[in-house]
Image 1 (cartoon, rainbow, N blue to C red):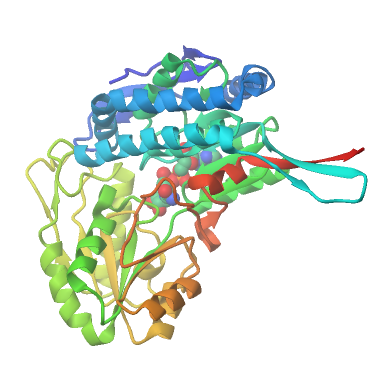
Image 2: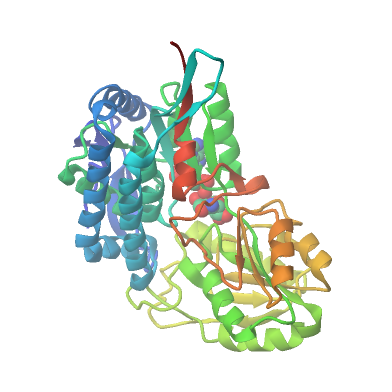
Length: 480
Ligand code: NAI
Ligand code: MG
């Protein structure tokens, strides 16, 4: 575990914040202090952006694409070699069960493998133009990319945003979340070890309103990538607007699982439960609403409830279905939703259970299935970011679409039906960035373009699509 009091990495050198301040890091499983990070602010961000600019204009900008790709691929291999250590750090720091942490580290490595392979496959095109002319469209990196990421999947977010930005030829300044960023410190050490040159990845740990705000408002960045809450997403976009910097925002959701009466119920239930309890519900694409056709609502709820009651919660080490949530604040936030639902008379259909490792000093909530929930109510509209599933009955396709699309979000959706024609109709009408038919991928699929409609954000991450965000075209006209 890095004792990360020098957790700021600028131009290839580890240092403490200019102001000398620190932030304590707590283990969600028991609330105890596990280390501290530097509380960087504008002074550190200024230096990091300067280093990133120098590297962009120097070593990184001059490196052949194939060599950039090789470095990223090498980092992917290095991450897999260190999987147990990285997974232990991630599990301790976020509270997630070890099995999930291992999956996360594997995915992190995959991002570096995938984008490492992509680095020399990003190319422009030519365009027919007037006689006597040739036009080339170059595809160039944007320059210095700013990254602000959340605490729910720190390592994976590092892979998702940093690997893509670097493959496209950008240099980076990253401000991770103050709640959990220990794996990111270790990943950055590994990047250093494999030879990523100084200034290419710069890491400034600190608070959102200090280091984060300074980064998003910096006039030395060319691009901004943010994952987190819609409220902070608005601040990021406003700051970016001041400098006319483009941004990608990934802001969470209230993603529906829509179950028709002809669905394979057993398979649907297995996947629906996994998609709400993964990472204790703290996943932007968690399937947090289950919409069930009225004709099978009661029967489906009975079967879902039975399986829901078997969900077990414990410490990251006990490696059960769910760990704790990230913090006391998040714990109270989730419990607040449950308390208000109870006051509003929404029935608690089923609960999971806490095991003996879920100690009182940790940040534990009991997974809950509630319903029927009015589609207009808070529980059906707002992102809980906890293991809370809201069940909503619907009558027919039109009704399902109205309810599914009837929130401020639009990230992903699952549809469960054996009818092929209905699958296509639903996929086309859902206002979301990913539709799964008889499947669901909360957080999954590094190859698959991912992003939102409406308040779930804009721009696309993952896959080749994300490389378009991190590059810009330049038109070159030649008279010959
Ligand atoms: P947040 O949006 O405050 O934090 C995300 C990142 O933004 C962190 O790195 C934080 O330091 C940074 N940040 C915070 N304030 C900032 C500012 N003024 N300027 C620049 N950066 C800033 O999210 P928070 O408070 O951790 O969680 C609140 C809710 O947001 C959650 O309950 C959940 O609903 C949602 N959320 C969604 C995530 C997703 O994956 N889409 C991830 C985390 C939170
Ligand atoms: Mg916040």
